[in-house]
Image 1 (cartoon, rainbow over the protein chains, first blue to last red):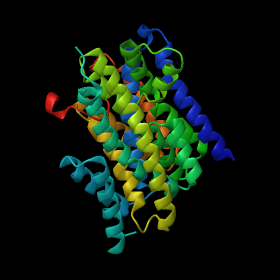
Image 2: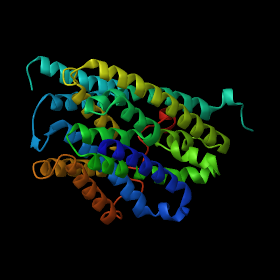
Image 3: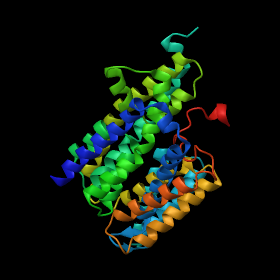
Length: 103
Length: 242
C-alpha cells in the first residue's frame, strides 16, 4: 500500500513539475543558476544511480557480475550503440559472467 | 510556407525518435517487474510519471532495497529538468486550456530536442506533438510488453537484468557527459555514492549525491556554462549538429 501511495505521489509531483514550466514567469527558470542546478542534479543523480546499481548490495559494497555489465555497457556506448543494444549488452555480460561462476 | 503533414520534417523526425524511444520501454517494463513492482504499478509509472529518467530512478532505488520514499524523492529530483524544458516549450507553443495539460505531460527530453531542432514555428509544434504523443503511445505499449515478458522470465539475476539496469543508467548518463566539467560532476557524485553506501540506508546514497550535485551547481555556477547537463539525452539531428 505504501508503495502504491508513493508511486502515485511520484506521478503527481512529476506532472506538476512539468506543468510548473508552463505556469511560472519565464525569467524564473531562465535564471542561469536555477538552470545550472537542474543540469548538475541530472548528471549527479544518473551517475549515482549507475554506481549504486553496479556495486551496492543493501548497505554493503560488492564486486560482482554487475561491474562487468558496467564495463561492457561503457564499451557499447563508446561504439555508439543505441540504447536498447546497450541494455541487452549489459544483461548479456552479467548473465554470461554468472554462467562462468562469478557472483 | 509550411509543408503538409506528410512531408513535414518536424513530424518525420518526431516519428523516428518516437519509434526508437518507444521501443526501449520494453527494457523499463522488464526491469521494473524485476525490481519488485507488479505489472499494474509498472504501467502506472509509464502512463502517469512518463519521464524515462524518473521512472528508471524509481525502480533503481527499489531494486537496491531503498524505501518507496527514497525512490519517489529520486524520481522527483530527476524530473526537475522537465520544468526547465516546459518553460522553453511554453515560449514556442503557448498552449492554453487542455492543450497546456497535454503539452506538460509529454514534455520530456525527446519532444524538446525534436522541437528545438526545427527552425520554422509550425515544424517546432509538429515535432513536439508527434514526438511527445508518439513516444507516449509506444512507450506505454512496450512497457506492457516488457512487464509481461519480465513477469514470465523467472529469476531476473539469471538473465542478467541487474546488469541491464546498470547499463540503462549509464546509457542515460552518457550523452550528458559532453564536457570535462560534466565528467567531473559525475565522478564526484559517483564517489559520494560509494562512500555513503555503508553508512546510510539503501536509496539514501542517491539523495546524498543529489545534494552534492546541487551544491556544485549552486556555488560553482560562474565557472561553467549555464546550460551544463541540460542538453536533452537524445540528439534527433546528428547530421546537422556534427
